[in-house]
Length: 296
Image (cartoon, rainbow, N blue to C red; front, top):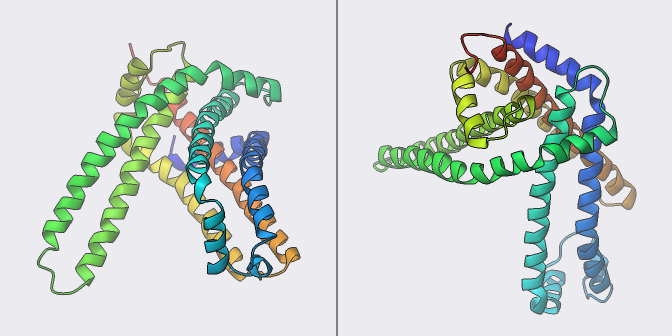
């Protein structure tokens, strides 16, 4: 089946499973509010006595920032620790939510209920968590090493550049190489998650090797499908940025409108995430049905 047909089927699945994206958005928003509330309360409490409080909504005044920094300089380590803890909790939450999304997309028939969503998240959590731990050195070695080699080659080629244009082009190529490497690693990890959820295997390393063989033989097809889903995300982001650019700001009502538009974009990103998984599951099922590519 062509990538366009697979992508069209994935779009249909994403539309039918719209509750998955809504759940991701609601849980992410709740988590963000729980994390941001203590910091917002502290800033609001101190801004009420700040010399620059009147200009807080209009601009981030230097005097206000200085005043706030002096007041909270003793609490900086605590704030940094809370931010790191929130980041760690969000990463664990993302592992759990990935299980709920993939499990829901793999369930045949009716749309998964909220109870089934949480059940799938808990069922696959430890498998996905072990994969998450494995992905850290993979990103550091694969992306870091290969990107370092590309950056070194570009620096060598532009060392004798007479103008700044070769340097600008080299920086653009280096960023493009980084994005491509991150995308390739992310795509393979997604297929490993799908394999862990679709099969009875629980060994992460064994499933990773099996997925590498399964998807690697049809890498161009898998990569093309991944780029199709990526183009949908890029189009969504460009639309958000263009509308956000022209939206007026400065009053509470307009700030509320900007906030609502931002939340619509976040919701769209969650739909895009489900679309990525749905398209990869469509290709995974096709590859699994091919005897020549199946793992024996």
